[in-house]
Amino acid sequence: MANGWTGNILRVNLTTGNITLEDSSKFKSFVGGMGFGYKIMYDEVPPGTKPFDEANKLVFATGPLTGSGAPCSSRVNITSLSTFTKGNLVVDAHMGGFFAAQMKFAGYDVIIIEGKAKSPVWLKIKDDKVSLEKADFLWGKGTRATTEEICRLTSPETCVAAIGQAGENLVPLSGMLNSRNHSGGAGTGAIMGSKNLKAIAVEGTKGVNIADRQEMKRLNDYMMTELIGANNNHVVPSTPQSWAEYSDPKSRWTARKGLFWGAAEGGPIETGEIPPGNQNTVGFRTYKSVFDLGPAAEKYTVKMSGCHSCPIRCMTQMNIPRVKEFGVPSTGGNTCVANFVHTTIFPNGPKDFEDKDDGRVIGNLVGLNLFDDYGLWCNYGQLHRDFTYCYSKGVFKRVLPAEEYAEIHWDQLEAGDVNFIKDFYYRLAHRVGELSHLADGSYAIAERWNLGEEYWGYAKNKLWSPFGYPVHHANEASAQVGSIVNCMFNRDCMTHTHINFIGSGLPLKLQREVAKELFGSEDAYDETKNYTPINDAKIKYAKWSLLRVCLHNAVTPV
View 1 (cartoon, rainbow, N blue to C red):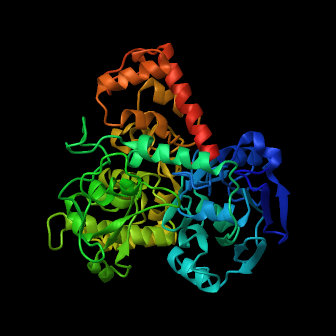
View 2 (cartoon, rainbow, N blue to C red):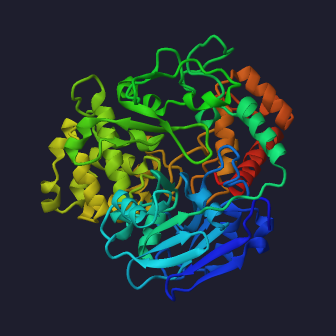
View 3 (cartoon, helix red, strand yellow):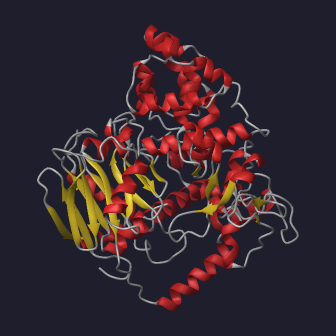
């Protein structure tokens, strides 16, 4: 295999310590990413295997575009058995950052982790040199300290995917992190913990073969100037602007005159109007801290950052000195739910400090830094919605032992005190008390705490089935189209294809014209909440969405 693939599978058996190299060409018809991952799990993991069994595997798979320089080609697909859903079916997690590119640069399309180490280890990869190293000195540390320690031992260029205390303690809702990016979707942190694998550290110095560099550059330029939008590919600005025919306040294309990176090094930097066509300004379009947290975040925003080879830069980088008072670093940031979910548990909202709404910004950075360091994962906010449900409905008072219930500072929760988040996350990550089972996942707590049909039918929970996943770019979009799409996945399908079509920001008339061109009829597309009966064009729309997302997840995991 060449021109996109390295041709190599790295297989690491933690039980025996054997490290072997295999030819990935046998999987070429499955393209890469999720195709490789599901094929390997199907072939090698016996039916009836449970997530924490030694026979379960972790498959890290890239695609042929990964590391090629193609825009938005930086994620790795991680396939294993789900730790928290009904049936523990095969699922795939996706992790951004720099890990996937470093895998390819080191010379590997796939890394297969199998077996279980007798004691904690970490996997060290530097091109062709691969070894298992003792990790006793790392066990018990968070993801941040683990990453720092391994980089001191290797190189600042090393990309480290590590678990925190949550993964070590087999918390079902846990993940691994690299470069502040999460392995969302599958509880992969607990799988690593069950195998006594603390981290995988990769540094590669090779390249990816490209058959026609000039054509590759032409396609990249076309994508950057003609196709790419903002985060979630929103293609119109959120405010009326001189260059734009349309605008939509829900768009993540948030750059505008008078909006600044307020804490930028050297002084505030204005995002300004960013019309299409200039590749060098694409990274100014998406301003997620303000989009996620409101205007109070502007003064604390240093810049927008992101993953390898991704021009969108959807990851907020903030600096809030006051955050140090809570024992966490003053810097940090992320994107989407990870930015804003932490203070949603406060029934009366977070307590402000100096400025209006700064409690939301400060509280969420404290929560984010703690959550990420522990290696917890929120299931797209479902963990926090489950907390709110159980608190508001009196479930905690019913199921928690009296002593445990009495020692929890519910007064801090009511007051919007950030210290409550510190105690809450510690309990989850260290499996302290009955409350910690909240991180077992929605299906598990519904069974354990006998929550009944009211829980599953409660609209604010956003749960679509006993699988335990909330709606997430799936059946909440385009009615029948989303429902068809959702039936095809063991997890939230995270199909950005149809949700991006809906959320593009374009007016309904134009969206329906595009639908006619793509699917043969304007009736393929309905105005949201004004749905018409199923028809052939909608089925074509669903098929297109499925094929596109599966191809994308194989070529370069989404």
